[in-house]
Image (cartoon, rainbow, N blue to C red; front, side, top):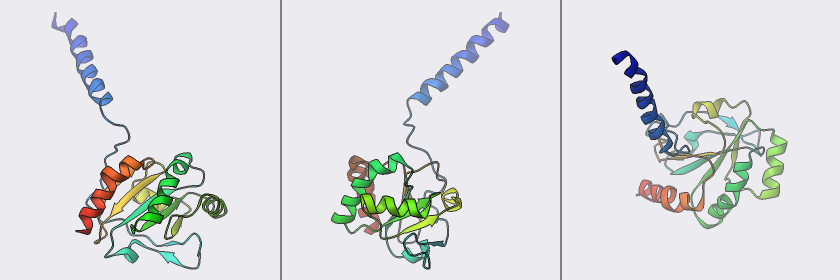
Length: 174
């Protein structure tokens, strides 16, 4: 008798796991890097290839790193908000141009505007891998000590900015 009930119990257990999984927000992906130092890198600047950028340049500041690409449609949807943030706040916003051709990236920023203090060119995507990037866009909030305090997967919405990211920035600034 138990032999015949075993498949029913297995099915019931799998159903519970499936149901619980459906209740979770797929845009919230855990990151092992939260509360850990941002990966160290030194990349050429997109608009100044003779100069480099490194997170060490940002020590002492609370800042955002936005991973973007010209081929990314979701990046296009969040871009107007980043333009507004750049115009209306003093939050340092830096770009990590991910697996993109420099010419395409520069043209994209020329057409849509450039909200970034600068963008670093991650041509091969290795820095993105170090940050645990699943896909673009992703945005990281990094504190004064260079520790990642928040990771946002997908386009940042106005609601995300007002209710999550900006309050975290204010908290980190003290």
